[in-house]
Image 1 (cartoon, one colour):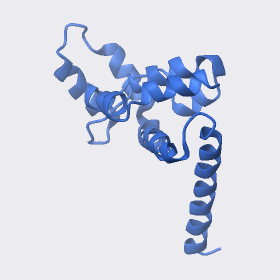
Image 2: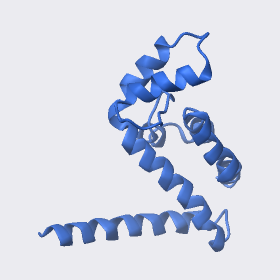
Image 3: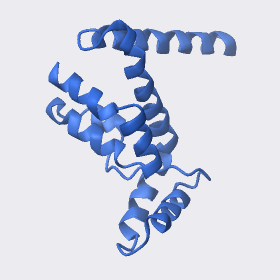
Length: 143
């Protein structure tokens, strides 16, 4: 199989997966709002994949940060721990893949904890701009 057909197959698979999720969401949200739900999850998953290889290093570095350290110093140490040269990290004790395989009754709480494991500027993106906790709550209420 050529690279182009492999890429095309993967894009088709991802598209079908996204529409499958949208079909499920329509029970809790209007069709026009589904994109507003799917986008934050796609961003979360992309960040999760990006940070996957550095997760253990970041968690270890997080435990070693002096509690008296300023938020700025804490962020710098955790940014460096990823080894990515990017200003992102996540200190939640699990990945999205692990959250997916946990007790569904804990899903809302664990996703909020996961979001709050990012540095403050990313927490703001998910909490204030995407309003993800409210959307998660609505999904939890609709089971």
